[in-house]
Length: 333
Image 1 (tube, rainbow, N blue to C red):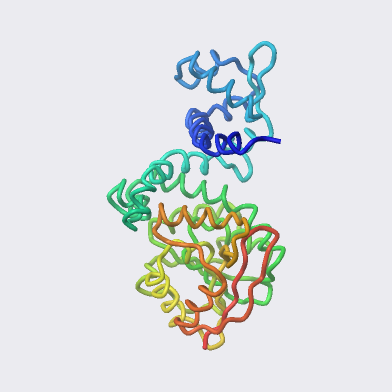
Image 2 (image 1 turned 180 degrees about the vertical axis):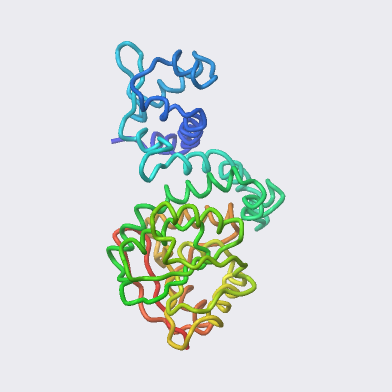
């Protein structure tokens, strides 16, 4: 059993691990080790790094099982670092890059955020996250990869818990690179869909859905959900969209959905639903991430009920999943 001081020291030092993993991802060390064990000198030559400094980094990460160091000081992959290969299934390399780079810088401004209420990311970078991604395509690509790393496990749990089979046309509002929609369409072979997002995002989604073989069932529509959303679907799906925005912005998005939807159309919101009590819940940390990076928030059951009622929706139910993600179901009034 550890002491409170030891536990606190581990928590205080958490940024060490974030940055260490970020650096090996940036240097593509997990990808280089896919071919087999290497010494730090060999890896340094292949990654344009300083040999001794790289050895010290890999030695530290090996002490936490991110890599394995043998008696000849050669490093190899472990189950943890396998997840950091960029070509691996459901790779978490993008997530490590995103959190170690610009999200890390935003969290470094948390004090300003808490003291003033101004979103830390906006203060550090001089613009909101999605504007930043629009004109830095290299970061947009990392963001897409990071979202797959965050949400792949959630998607499997959502598809196991929620039945999409009685939907004819599903509108994925803010569907991003289409990875979630691809999974839904793959499981539901008769389902057709609309993917709606900004024009710069649509291009990435088309390529992604073409690779998965479901693009022929998708209508791609570019636009801005703060202005309007397309009609033509019987169910509207928003996965980790509403949590990106404050209440006023969320009301605009939801009312635009309501205006496009048919009578008794279904609204499906996939989000964390925070407990009202003090129990531990990972979504409470995601709430801080939303506060610092996008200016949004995670919400409780009662907060979602109020938001939906204000936007003309009738609450129906919450479908829990094996993860902390839930699917909120509401109907147009």
